[in-house]
Image (tube, rainbow, N blue to C red; front, side):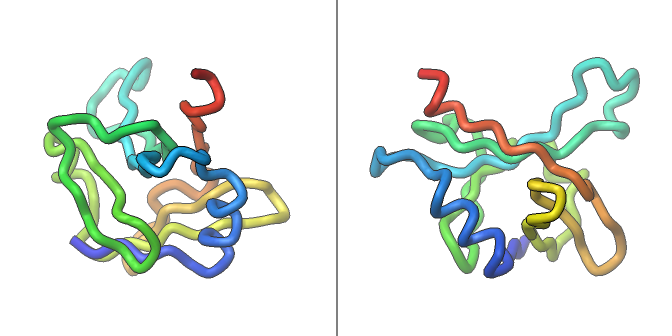
Length: 111
């Protein structure tokens, strides 16, 4: 699996990352309230530490962690971008727009 961050996404994340050296990025597949597991929504999280059962994927920015059970829902090559006009991230691949308005949840701020 290959995940690439655009320059815009890196700039935005640099402003939002926790000051903790252990903070990590996680890409989660949320299915709560979706009715069907294949209708899940991709969400980006900044967390103090990675979940123990998550898969580490190296990127051009920082490693990102994904739940192993959700790997089947991701494409092999994906890009995470940032759209300033809408103040949101995007997750896409060469074959589909996975989430054009992906939320970022900063769990470090709520701690």
